[in-house]
Amino acid sequence: MVGAVLATFLSVSALTFDLQPLRAALGNESLVADVVAIYLESEEELSERMRVAAAREDWPEVARAAHALRGAVLAIAAHDVAPTLHELEVSARNGAAMEPLCDALHALGELRSRLSP
Figure (tube, rainbow, N blue to C red):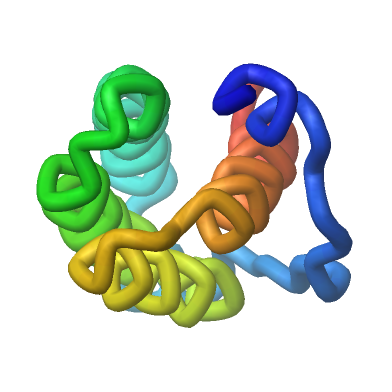
């Protein structure tokens, strides 16, 4: 059942994302590239951690991964994704998070596709 739910992505509002605030803050395109590369690596690891935890119905672990991912998306100024991860974190702490998990994975996938070279 978990696999079937994960395969069905629910509608998430259109993601708006711009690296300009990060570029302005760092002032160096090389640093921006490094930060994005680090984000992509950690996002992949944390998203997989969430999927595995959800399959085990380990909601506290899903909440921890969502919290870490929220920090990561805020670090790259992807503010549209942070509320989705916050909702997942809260829902997971309450033990029911399949719908927010699907929303979060969808939003993270959309962000990843925009950032990947």
